[in-house]
Every structure is written in C-alpha cells, then in structure tokens.
Length: 190
Ligand code: GLN
Image (tube, rainbow, N blue to C red):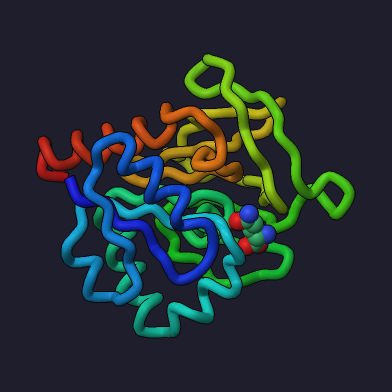
C-alpha cells in the first residue's frame, strides 16, 4: 500500500515515521502529479493558511479531486483543510467532510496540551497544538474519538480527520485505523 503524506509544510515527517513503522510505503507528496501514485493521503498539522497558499489554485483543485475520491486523513491543520466550512477566520476548505471547524478554538492560554480522550471507547493520549474545534457535524459524519464532550476524530466513509496529533503520541492505533480503511477501500474497489 502506498500512502502519501502531504509535505509542503508542517510535521509531515512524524507521520512518515509512524506509517513506515506500520509497514506502509510512504511517498512525501510535494507535486500534484504524485497524487496519482498513492492509495491514501495524510494531510499533516502545520498552518492551514500557509498550506493553502503553498498549494496554489491548481494544487488545491487537484488535491480536492483526490480527497473527494480516495481515502484521506487530516490532522489538525489537515482536519481544517478537509472541512466544508472553516471559521476564525473563514478560509477555503476541500469539502471532503461536511463539518464546520473553528481554528485556534482554545485560545492562547491553553493553546497546547496533552489530554486523555476516548478512541472507539478505549482511553488514548491526545496531543493538542493550537487545535481547532469541530463545531458542527453534517449527516453521515460519525464520531470516532472524543475528548470530554468534543468530537476530536471524525469519519465519513473513506475520509477521517482529527483535531489532535496522533503522530506525536507513542501509540500506533489511529494510523493503523487509517491504514485499515485504505486497505478496505482497496479490497472493495471504493
Ligand atoms: N492553528 C493551525 C491552523 O489554523 C493548526 C495547528 C496545528 O496544525 N497544530 O491551521
């Protein structure tokens, strides 16, 4: 299985390492045509506004085609990019997940923290860094992990997004969940 990690900006290398530990073949995606070579894509954390600028219009359009048809997993800034609606401030989203996401939703004081949440009803460590909050979920978007009452990992079909950084915890479960989703899609031809 070939998994791409969008490598324009942000902490893409931590995703690469984790995916390779789980035996995936990883391609660092820097050019739009590399999207044609991969079975699934991780969009890392970083600054979503900067990633948008670096993508440019043509990169955005090609990435949008990809995420609307193939498995994708966005973390933090990547989660923001995958949403239909983005607030604080408003910016373009790729529209792969019908949800509203508020950027930098925790304010300056608690902008970064490590908390315990629940992933598929099991406890799991979650690293939040200037995290967004998912404020609205569309029909068909299911909550896979929560922190307190907040949805922090959601999924709709082949697309998933987390407001925290699973690549920064020493726990492979969430990346494995994504790899299983990509493998299932391959099996059923979706
Ligand atoms: N605050 C960043 C943004 O709005 C996301 C932070 C992160 O990815 N750790 O894009």
